[in-house]
Image 1 (cartoon, rainbow over the protein chains, first blue to last red):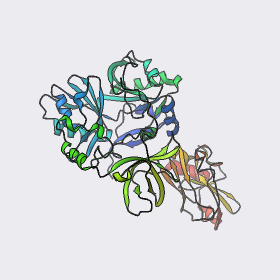
Image 2: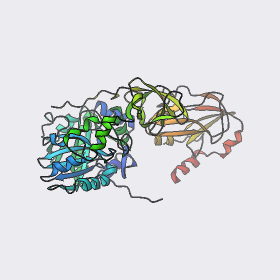
Image 3: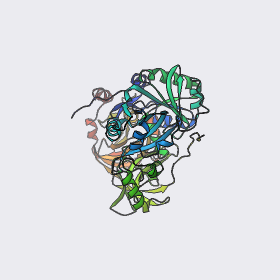
Image 4: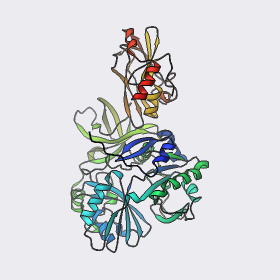
Length: 374
Length: 127
């Protein structure tokens, strides 16, 4: 067995000091939990939580050709972005399969930041370079090792961050970002997240990560802030039906199948994957992502097969499943044929050889509390 | 972390308390801590036959699924029916309210092959 050294964020010692349990994730050694997934989940839903997401990647595209380069590789229409606006998007293969899902930040008139998944940083950088590197007037750099990224999420997030910056947080709309000083450190503060609570993602220089981490935890102590690991990050995003690359999205799955048609702008001009996606949109998708609740006893887990009640042959696969801490019942996401995707459809999951009934339900599973767009 | 001296332990992190010919079985403090918040427990029916080192159920945390292994061979005479509705009891009181099954042992000498608390602690340190 070959052992690849796991990468560590600038906050590794902080996590250890807080008693975090560290696990490998996407090539990184990351905290999966500090005090417990359920308690951390609850803290984010009711108070505030601080996540180290520095493992995520930052690709910066700039120059007069920056927009052209970005438009070439992303499915969403980045030309609609004003400076200081953020957009969710996907990058696709010519087949329409998903290379990655990402957020696109327009940091300046000719400067874009692509925030990508940790496990895909090298693949994405190579892909963007290959597909758009020759765009006249555009340079593409991988700045992933220059940025620490912290996510402060929860109803008390604005009150906590407000004590550390003079930026107008109340005026910062959902999916917008602004340069700001946080505790004297130059940062980019973005009103985004992966929890469906109000909150911020804060980019700071790599070495400033520990200082900002500590200061936010201190500032939030009276508000009940807790550090949050990947365990609760997963349950929080799952309750919102947010896709996790490697589960709901991969190179064999298109954004249309994942229910992300709203980030595929076929009329924006050509981009990688456009023809395949246009064809699929016209002909119809073969599988569709649904959310379900388990009605029997058991928790559905990723990889388990989905069946019509009583049928031996599977019709689909579970991509994520957990016990919802908010609903206190097992929920999951999975792909099924479109004719079995209607809300209310009764299906079964094979849970280690036992058939457990599930039902397709409306998503998100819980109400969203993100700040409304301005 | 606690490992009561009156219990016997397995390498799969179950404990056993002998009450005459009956073995009370649960998972150790180490096991509950390693699992994290327990959110689901699946136990056998009363009357089910269990074998030493054979599975008798499943315990799941938010993230992980773990099989439960019986330390001894015998027949399940009682299960902790409060656990499916209160799985967090396994975290809060693994050696008390968090017990899982009671087994009528067919061969109580199997207990001799289990670890003492001191042996189990030493086993945890080296693994």
